[in-house]
Length: 389
Length: 245
Image (cartoon, rainbow over all chains, first blue to last red; front, top):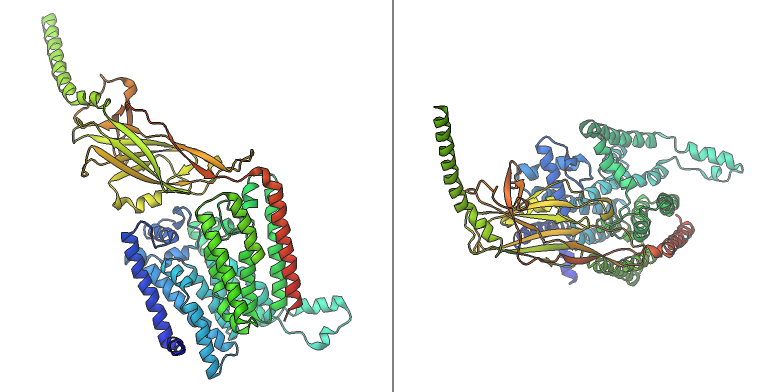
């Protein structure tokens, strides 16, 4: 067993195996789609492909209802129309394997540089590469692996102090999906000029405050903010010019103002459903936003020296306390979990216990939500999940 | 002279009309008979929010092969059809569908209205007198109940059955209530007159239920949710602050 694990986690074997398994899943998915009533391919993949088809016809991708992503994704998937429907899935599994490679590189940079540590880094990265969840998600045609690769790429470049590349990747990832925007605070805190001990003991609180604000004014942070902001604004301006207000609404504003009353994993789901048309619905939405904001601020401040851990916590908090949460959101923080695992002081039993709780929550929610029993159960389970988190 | 000419023209036109009426009677006559021995029944398949409406049409044995069949469904606002799903699965079925309006896939039931679809089954299957059409439908979320109900009913009316043959062009001698204009084919390029078949057995609408929220619980739900989230927020913040790097 030990030899098998060792063999499997050899660098080339690991990447080849994980890519081959994903490729086999894509082939199987094609078979299942053709022969069985329950389809393997994710419904979103058809949405992306329809949007790509609109682009090839010179129309807006937003003519496809429920397409709420950047036009860049539809542009990327135009070979689905010109070459083969399978192109997008291959792109997603390549990004998935690339994410595994990025996890490995981040782990190497995060102090696992010795020969023995490299083996550990490979084993930990195999938690992503040989994990059936991302395998299934990317081979079903879900685009989350592109986001995982962009976020991990940003973190790798930040760890390696390649600020230019990091800022371009960060600008691109915020453009692709809005959630990494919350990383701006821990990134800014980690890039500011470090305070010296003497400054820390300063008696005057307001002076300390001015020095704290002043610590944000440095070349590195300015470079990062201007390049990332520039990439984001350029892409936004380009697509606004091409597709107008509909692009802004569907890609960003819809997600900001979204109050999905259809069942989802959010603890707020049942509350927002019951009060959807009420006069105080807006206030409840705001009240639901506050715990998320407070926790993000605290996590940023408390853990910003360890940027990867801070980003992991940010994503986990953002997803768990969001007003809408679907199963694909879990991948947003799962891709960061292998990066932080070697630095956790959890025992194996504790880790396995937490993992089982996480799966138990998923399984119960899946059965309750997908078998559509009474809505009261949704509420109970949603609260259970919140307790668990 | 004019009187003779006029009487000849009148005589000729009457003769022509009689011949034409004879032809029309030959082609349209069976349409009247089909009223009697045709039946339409509807069943609901699958469970949960994603169901199937299975329509079985038993045509009269006298129905000729060249007849065109149209089923008009009037869907209630509690359900919707996904046009993209219908387009993607179009090669796996032997009927075509035309929707009368754009369908919002996400809006809840109380903020939308019903819609009409025209379904055109083909008669070249293994048993052309027995048509089976399976339409995938999806439930919309409904407004929470103010009286503590946990389910809401959705009624699906059986579709109207309409028939048309290319040869029977004049439907004037049929009961005007039984003739209606509808798109000739699913591409909606032209309108034809169809004969509406009143089935002998009137089937009642089929009904099924979707879960709804209980609005009477709004206070405990909001209070409980906010309390739990605030407690989690405070506990996590304290823990993170205590263990900060």
